[in-house]
Length: 213
Image (cartoon, rainbow, N blue to C red; front, top):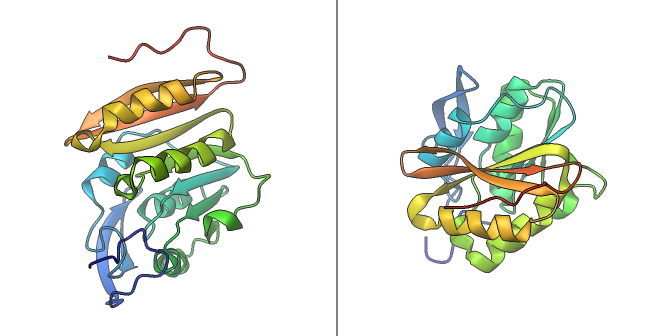
């Protein structure tokens, strides 16, 4: 795709809409995907590991899918928590359009597909679930997480899935050092070459630091 990446704001590649059948929240559903977005032909392995190794989402409040792509995480959250408000956040306009299409097709009225700057500043999240865009580079990735993790509500968790050979362990160490006071960071699961990292925001700073291997 040359300079056209799934994290491009307006992909220049052909849209090539397609319909694929996937399993989300235990249901087989048909969704619309397209070229110029991440993993257009299936639920990617990392997202599959994340969805299989996280607890049921909170039943209400605001939930965040950070880097939504065509929406497998956001759609799963909305299916599992119909009374919650799910924010599907991405910089890719095509991806956000697909989330909206898929939410409508699945009769899900509780999803807001939004650009990062369009999420109101006063919204706090009861959970964040993310397969973050590692390939944007370390500086951009760190800035992304520094922006959104502090928006966790108290006693709420962020769950991130990262491929081991793309730096999951170093990211875990950075998270523990960056969010040292008031948070805890741990590896929650491992599968298919991926790590699931859990970041918990506490009501007060944790009494003991996390000892990373």
